[in-house]
Image (cartoon, rainbow, N blue to C red; front, side):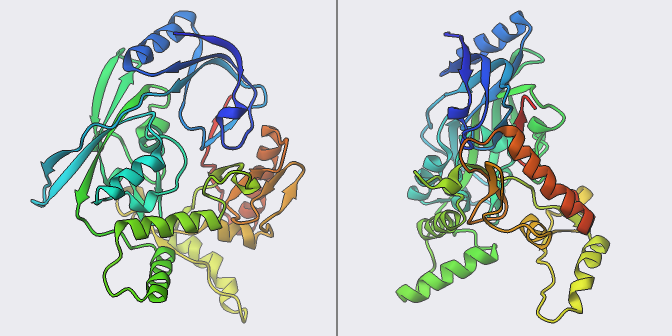
Length: 367
């Protein structure tokens, strides 16, 4: 493999921010994954695996170690299997370096349901189990069957069933208890051929119904129609990568939607109930089970706006997207320190006003 020195990481991220990697290499095969991992071990340097760069904030000083760009490509012909409900499924074995949105487009074209609401999300397949990527009523944890990865601890490849991945809201074992241990090389998704699209997110339901009424469609919506609606919603919020759109110089949603107890939610909502014209904060059910039992999800965007921040808010070269309050953007020449300063200002005021500490969603590299 070619190990290059002092490679700028900014061009590899959607934020366009980041200093140099001390070492940089690209792996196009599992053999090269092993070679890079062993090189880092032998040279006693830290290793960071880079995918699509869409969910990262890289330090201005860069990364003092080896950045491995995972570029494994290929999607095996889907295999038919029987589901536990006796309905057939199609399993796609997909290499980690495949573009996620292109993969979603392929499955929709094939008529396989399960990830159509995740259309338009930038990044690569390998990052989806790490973050348990989700949006508009779907999460990849619902359809992931298996994750193949190189285990740097035991120095061999392993295949982990979905129940071994520790999935929860925007989390997995890959970004929590076993952060840095595994290098994902393949993800297997179990999708439903001929299945109906998922319509459980109110914004998507409204948009689909509006379009159907406009076109006077009497049949049920197709996977392609729902995926198209999701892409248009994402574009309206600056969450779809569009060339020359300054709102696309972001890492997507910078904060996770907080999951809070019912008592805290009522404390937040109570003062507004008595004010004419003010609506109570939106609420959504948390993923049931475990620590989320009896808790609710509240939109981080609502908290941010109620704390006094608006779309287009600027703090130096860092700012809030003009289309969506959840996205922090590089207004041109921003440094990682400026993005973090804005993020901390938002977090401090939200916590002061509502008692909720927002959690940063992108991975912080070298910070």
